Image (cartoon, rainbow, N blue to C red; front, side, top):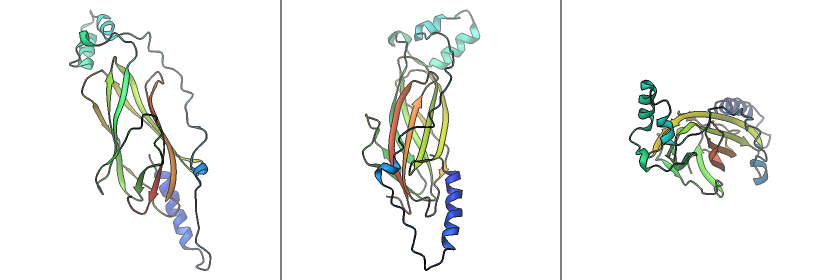
Length: 226
Protein backbone atom coordinates (compact mmCIF):
# COMPACT_ATOMS: atom_id res chain seq x y z
CA UNK A 1 0.00 0.00 0.00
CA UNK A 2 2.89 2.41 -0.69
CA UNK A 3 1.98 5.89 -1.79
CA UNK A 4 5.21 7.94 -1.99
CA UNK A 5 4.75 8.96 -5.62
CA UNK A 6 1.06 9.63 -5.11
CA UNK A 7 1.89 11.78 -2.07
CA UNK A 8 4.31 14.02 -4.02
CA UNK A 9 1.86 14.41 -6.86
CA UNK A 10 -0.91 15.25 -4.41
CA UNK A 11 1.14 17.96 -2.66
CA UNK A 12 2.12 19.56 -5.98
CA UNK A 13 -1.44 19.47 -7.26
CA UNK A 14 -2.78 20.90 -4.02
CA UNK A 15 -0.38 23.86 -4.25
CA UNK A 16 -1.58 24.47 -7.80
CA UNK A 17 -5.19 24.22 -6.59
CA UNK A 18 -4.64 27.00 -4.01
CA UNK A 19 -3.31 29.31 -6.72
CA UNK A 20 -6.59 29.07 -8.62
CA UNK A 21 -8.75 32.13 -8.68
CA UNK A 22 -11.27 32.29 -5.84
CA UNK A 23 -13.96 32.97 -8.42
CA UNK A 24 -13.56 29.48 -9.87
CA UNK A 25 -15.83 26.78 -8.46
CA UNK A 26 -14.15 24.15 -6.26
CA UNK A 27 -13.04 20.93 -7.92
CA UNK A 28 -15.50 18.11 -7.46
CA UNK A 29 -14.42 14.47 -7.72
CA UNK A 30 -17.16 11.86 -7.43
CA UNK A 31 -15.87 8.37 -8.24
CA UNK A 32 -18.57 6.00 -9.40
CA UNK A 33 -18.46 2.38 -8.27
CA UNK A 34 -17.54 1.24 -11.75
CA UNK A 35 -14.66 3.71 -11.99
CA UNK A 36 -12.86 2.70 -8.79
CA UNK A 37 -12.73 -0.99 -9.63
CA UNK A 38 -9.99 -2.03 -12.04
CA UNK A 39 -11.28 -4.46 -14.64
CA UNK A 40 -7.91 -6.03 -15.24
CA UNK A 41 -4.80 -6.65 -13.17
CA UNK A 42 -2.14 -5.33 -15.53
CA UNK A 43 0.43 -5.79 -12.79
CA UNK A 44 0.17 -9.59 -12.79
CA UNK A 45 3.63 -10.88 -13.49
CA UNK A 46 4.24 -13.33 -16.28
CA UNK A 47 6.69 -14.85 -13.83
CA UNK A 48 9.07 -17.54 -14.94
CA UNK A 49 8.57 -20.59 -12.77
CA UNK A 50 11.63 -21.30 -10.65
CA UNK A 51 12.74 -24.88 -11.08
CA UNK A 52 13.20 -26.22 -7.57
CA UNK A 53 13.15 -29.88 -8.53
CA UNK A 54 10.49 -32.46 -7.64
CA UNK A 55 8.42 -31.76 -4.55
CA UNK A 56 9.04 -33.97 -1.52
CA UNK A 57 7.20 -34.76 1.68
CA UNK A 58 8.81 -33.71 4.96
CA UNK A 59 10.06 -37.22 5.60
CA UNK A 60 11.60 -37.38 2.14
CA UNK A 61 13.26 -33.99 2.71
CA UNK A 62 15.00 -35.39 5.80
CA UNK A 63 15.97 -38.64 4.11
CA UNK A 64 17.58 -36.85 1.15
CA UNK A 65 21.28 -36.06 1.59
CA UNK A 66 21.17 -37.40 5.15
CA UNK A 67 24.88 -38.12 4.97
CA UNK A 68 25.61 -34.42 4.48
CA UNK A 69 25.98 -33.19 8.06
CA UNK A 70 25.70 -29.46 7.36
CA UNK A 71 22.64 -29.95 5.14
CA UNK A 72 21.02 -32.21 7.73
CA UNK A 73 21.52 -29.59 10.47
CA UNK A 74 20.07 -26.87 8.20
CA UNK A 75 16.97 -28.97 7.52
CA UNK A 76 16.49 -29.70 11.22
CA UNK A 77 16.84 -26.01 12.02
CA UNK A 78 14.26 -25.14 9.35
CA UNK A 79 11.79 -27.74 10.60
CA UNK A 80 12.26 -26.72 14.23
CA UNK A 81 10.08 -28.68 16.62
CA UNK A 82 7.86 -30.24 13.94
CA UNK A 83 6.99 -33.85 14.70
CA UNK A 84 7.58 -35.30 11.24
CA UNK A 85 5.91 -38.58 12.16
CA UNK A 86 2.62 -36.77 12.86
CA UNK A 87 2.63 -34.66 9.69
CA UNK A 88 0.56 -35.87 6.78
CA UNK A 89 2.60 -37.20 3.86
CA UNK A 90 1.48 -34.36 1.63
CA UNK A 91 3.46 -32.73 -1.14
CA UNK A 92 1.62 -29.42 -1.26
CA UNK A 93 2.08 -26.95 1.61
CA UNK A 94 -0.91 -25.05 2.90
CA UNK A 95 -0.81 -21.43 4.09
CA UNK A 96 -3.76 -19.87 5.85
CA UNK A 97 -3.83 -16.12 6.57
CA UNK A 98 -5.46 -15.90 9.98
CA UNK A 99 -5.48 -12.14 10.64
CA UNK A 100 -4.79 -8.79 8.99
CA UNK A 101 -4.35 -5.54 10.90
CA UNK A 102 -3.45 -1.93 10.15
CA UNK A 103 -1.14 -0.56 12.85
CA UNK A 104 -0.80 3.20 13.36
CA UNK A 105 0.66 5.26 16.23
CA UNK A 106 -2.22 7.73 15.75
CA UNK A 107 -4.97 5.31 16.76
CA UNK A 108 -5.82 1.79 17.89
CA UNK A 109 -5.19 -1.17 15.63
CA UNK A 110 -7.67 -1.72 12.80
CA UNK A 111 -8.34 -5.46 12.71
CA UNK A 112 -9.61 -6.49 9.27
CA UNK A 113 -11.78 -9.59 8.90
CA UNK A 114 -10.26 -12.03 6.42
CA UNK A 115 -13.06 -12.80 3.94
CA UNK A 116 -13.40 -16.43 2.86
CA UNK A 117 -14.40 -15.31 -0.63
CA UNK A 118 -11.47 -12.89 -0.90
CA UNK A 119 -13.81 -10.00 -1.69
CA UNK A 120 -14.90 -7.87 1.28
CA UNK A 121 -18.28 -6.27 0.74
CA UNK A 122 -18.27 -2.50 0.50
CA UNK A 123 -15.58 -0.26 1.98
CA UNK A 124 -12.98 -2.37 3.82
CA UNK A 125 -11.20 0.39 5.75
CA UNK A 126 -10.35 4.11 5.81
CA UNK A 127 -6.91 5.72 6.17
CA UNK A 128 -6.26 9.23 7.41
CA UNK A 129 -4.28 11.39 5.00
CA UNK A 130 -0.68 12.03 6.02
CA UNK A 131 -0.77 9.27 8.66
CA UNK A 132 1.91 6.69 9.45
CA UNK A 133 0.82 3.06 9.32
CA UNK A 134 1.95 -0.46 8.57
CA UNK A 135 0.27 -3.75 7.73
CA UNK A 136 0.60 -6.69 10.11
CA UNK A 137 -0.59 -10.21 9.36
CA UNK A 138 -0.38 -13.69 10.87
CA UNK A 139 -0.43 -16.98 9.00
CA UNK A 140 -0.23 -20.70 9.67
CA UNK A 141 1.79 -23.14 7.54
CA UNK A 142 0.80 -26.81 7.45
CA UNK A 143 1.49 -30.06 5.53
CA UNK A 144 4.87 -29.16 4.07
CA UNK A 145 7.53 -26.45 3.73
CA UNK A 146 6.40 -23.37 1.80
CA UNK A 147 9.21 -21.86 -0.24
CA UNK A 148 9.51 -18.18 -1.21
CA UNK A 149 6.26 -16.93 0.29
CA UNK A 150 5.63 -13.36 -0.84
CA UNK A 151 3.04 -10.60 -0.55
CA UNK A 152 2.03 -8.43 -3.53
CA UNK A 153 -0.25 -5.42 -3.58
CA UNK A 154 -1.58 -3.24 -6.41
CA UNK A 155 -3.63 -0.06 -5.94
CA UNK A 156 -5.80 1.85 -8.41
CA UNK A 157 -7.63 5.16 -8.26
CA UNK A 158 -10.43 5.77 -10.77
CA UNK A 159 -9.09 2.85 -12.80
CA UNK A 160 -5.50 4.16 -12.97
CA UNK A 161 -2.75 2.19 -11.23
CA UNK A 162 -1.07 4.40 -8.63
CA UNK A 163 1.05 1.89 -6.71
CA UNK A 164 2.47 -1.63 -6.95
CA UNK A 165 4.59 -3.39 -4.34
CA UNK A 166 6.00 -6.82 -3.51
CA UNK A 167 7.65 -8.13 -0.36
CA UNK A 168 9.40 -11.45 0.05
CA UNK A 169 8.49 -13.08 3.37
CA UNK A 170 10.68 -16.18 3.22
CA UNK A 171 10.58 -19.97 3.53
CA UNK A 172 8.59 -21.51 6.38
CA UNK A 173 8.15 -24.99 7.81
CA UNK A 174 4.79 -26.26 9.08
CA UNK A 175 4.06 -25.60 12.75
CA UNK A 176 1.04 -25.25 15.00
CA UNK A 177 1.92 -21.72 16.16
CA UNK A 178 1.18 -18.92 13.66
CA UNK A 179 3.90 -16.81 12.10
CA UNK A 180 3.66 -13.00 12.35
CA UNK A 181 4.99 -10.50 9.84
CA UNK A 182 4.91 -6.70 10.05
CA UNK A 183 5.48 -4.64 6.92
CA UNK A 184 7.65 -1.52 6.81
CA UNK A 185 5.97 1.72 7.90
CA UNK A 186 4.40 3.85 5.18
CA UNK A 187 2.76 7.27 5.02
CA UNK A 188 -0.53 7.94 3.28
CA UNK A 189 -0.52 10.80 0.77
CA UNK A 190 -2.30 14.01 1.66
CA UNK A 191 -4.08 16.77 -0.21
CA UNK A 192 -7.29 17.17 -2.13
CA UNK A 193 -6.18 14.92 -4.98
CA UNK A 194 -5.01 12.16 -2.64
CA UNK A 195 -8.31 11.93 -0.81
CA UNK A 196 -11.01 9.69 -2.24
CA UNK A 197 -11.82 6.09 -3.09
CA UNK A 198 -9.27 3.46 -4.11
CA UNK A 199 -9.46 -0.17 -5.20
CA UNK A 200 -6.73 -2.71 -4.53
CA UNK A 201 -5.70 -6.33 -4.92
CA UNK A 202 -3.46 -8.18 -2.46
CA UNK A 203 -2.05 -11.67 -2.94
CA UNK A 204 -0.02 -14.21 -0.96
CA UNK A 205 1.93 -16.51 -3.30
CA UNK A 206 4.87 -18.91 -3.17
CA UNK A 207 7.78 -19.71 -5.51
CA UNK A 208 5.50 -21.87 -7.65
CA UNK A 209 3.06 -18.94 -7.98
CA UNK A 210 0.49 -20.88 -5.97
CA UNK A 211 -1.88 -18.27 -4.56
CA UNK A 212 -3.04 -18.90 -0.99
CA UNK A 213 -5.18 -15.78 -0.67
CA UNK A 214 -6.29 -13.06 -3.07
CA UNK A 215 -8.23 -10.10 -1.70
CA UNK A 216 -9.95 -7.53 -3.93
CA UNK A 217 -11.15 -4.58 -1.90
CA UNK A 218 -11.85 -0.85 -1.72
CA UNK A 219 -10.67 1.71 0.80
CA UNK A 220 -10.79 5.48 1.32
CA UNK A 221 -8.27 8.16 2.20
CA UNK A 222 -9.98 10.95 4.14
CA UNK A 223 -9.15 13.93 6.34
CA UNK A 224 -9.59 11.78 9.42
CA UNK A 225 -9.91 8.16 10.48
CA UNK A 226 -13.38 6.69 10.04
